[in-house]
Amino acid sequence: MMRAWMLPILLVLSGSLVAAGVFAKGDPGEAVVLLLLFVLLAGAHSRLVFPRPVSAPEAQRRSAVDGRPIVYWRPGCQYCLRLRIRLGRHARQVYWVDIWRDADGAAVVRAANDGNETVPTVVVAGRPFVNPDPAWVREKLSPSE
Image 1 (cartoon, helix red, strand yellow):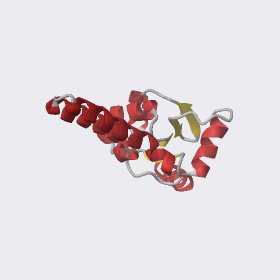
Image 2 (cartoon, one colour; image 1 turned 90 degrees about the vertical axis):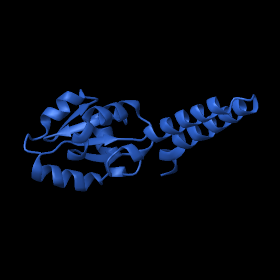
Image 3 (cartoon, helix red, strand yellow; image 1 turned 30 degrees about the vertical axis):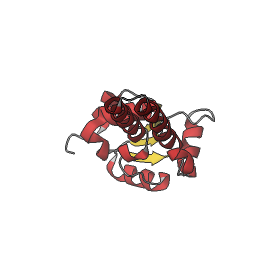
């Protein structure tokens, strides 16, 4: 669990150091702006931006019932963040499995990617797709949702 927060913590600490240096040079306004920028970057690379993750077995069970895609992801992945942002409000219609918190999810991703933990891996109707276009993922959601 700690490694999921490593990048956001490093971003906040780095931003604090940079802001302190700028503040010490006598520009408090710029220091505040820089610190806010680093905090926003940390938030974007944390799991706070993503819908609440579910376990891989639970996501597979739910997907079998309603046909929604499963997205296997990890915090700090720029491609996962891109997918999340481009899905917009539709992101809550997809089942998110954090492979750093779920060993079963990591195993699914490794099985689909020749032993590599390449994310995002999206599973639709039992077929894995690596880093698909977000528009394609939106198309796979049922229109009634």
